[in-house]
Image (cartoon, rainbow, N blue to C red; front, side):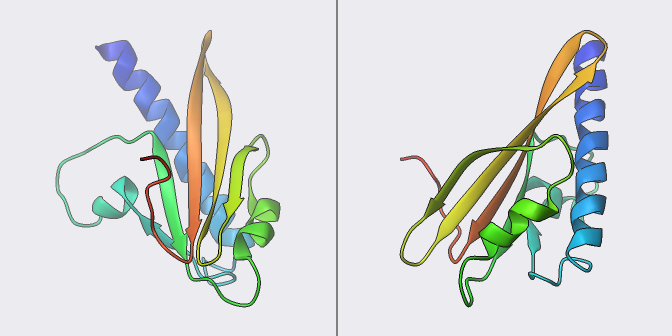
Length: 121
C-alpha cells in the first residue's frame, strides 16, 4: 500500500508541475480561457485528500480550434495520444510517462473544447 501511495504522490507532483507550466504559458489560463474540471476541480470543495489519474480542462469553442494552440503549451515530455474535432466539440488527449525508481507512471491531460462529453460509449 505504501508503494502505491508513493506512486500516486509522484503523479500528483508531475500534474502540479504541468498545471503551473500551462498556467504560465496561457497567461494564467486566460489565453485561451481554460477551466479545470473533474477530480482536480473537486479539491477546492472537499476536505478529503483524493488522487486522480488525469487532469481535465474545458474550454469554449471560439474562432477556430483552441486545442490546436494548446499543443504548444504542453510541458516537455507530453505526447499527443489523440485529437478529434467534430462540428461543435473536440478534444485533445496527452500523456507523459514519468519515472519513479524503476517504475514508469502514466500522467494524462485532457482538453475538451465546445462541449464536455464522454469519449467512449
